[in-house]
Image 1 (tube, rainbow, N blue to C red):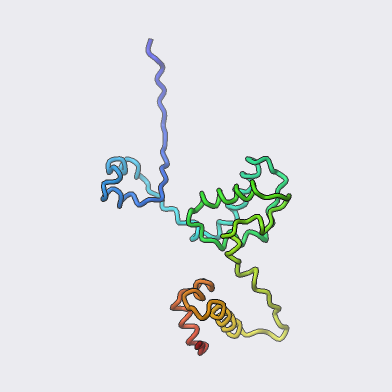
Image 2 (cartoon, helix red, strand yellow; image 1 turned 180 degrees about the horizontal axis):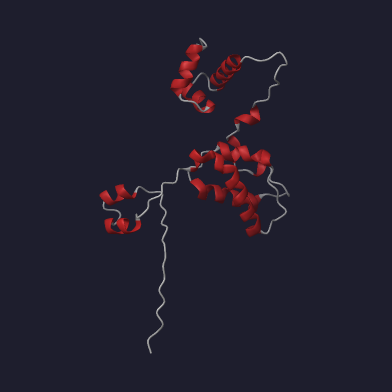
Length: 186
C-alpha cells in the first residue's frame, strides 16, 4: 500500500543580524534563497533603542533562568534594573539573556546584589542613582540646576566635550549650545 501522505502548512521565521542585501551583492548569500525567505521582512530595532523594554525583559529572563537553574528562591531587587537599562547591549536580546543566566548561576545569596553583576554593567552607573538633592521649599531654578549639571559633567571629564555630552546623553552640538547659553568657558 501507499504510505499515508500528510499535508502540512508551515511558516518559517528566519532571523539574522547581517545585511543580506549587501551579502547578495558580494556573492556571499544566495539571491534565490533571499527572495524565498523575504516575503515579509520585519525590522527589529536594536535593544539600545528599546530601553523601555529592558526591565521587562530582565524580569522575564530572570524567571526563566531561575527555573532552569533550580534557584526559585532567588530575588532580583528592582534597584538593580537601572544598571541593565543604562548599558547599550551590542549583542542585543541574546546578550541580555546570557548575562542574566550567568548572574543567576554565579550569585551566592538569596538575592542578587550589585557585586553579582558583571563589571561592565556596574560601570554604567545609572544617572538616577547618583543624583540626590533635596528640593528646597522656596523653589529652584531649573536653569541653575542644568548649568550645575553641565559644569559637573565637564569637570568629571576634564572638559572633554564629547565625553561630557555622552555622559549627559545629549549631542556634542547641544552641549556646546548650552555651554554658550550659560557662558561656560574652561
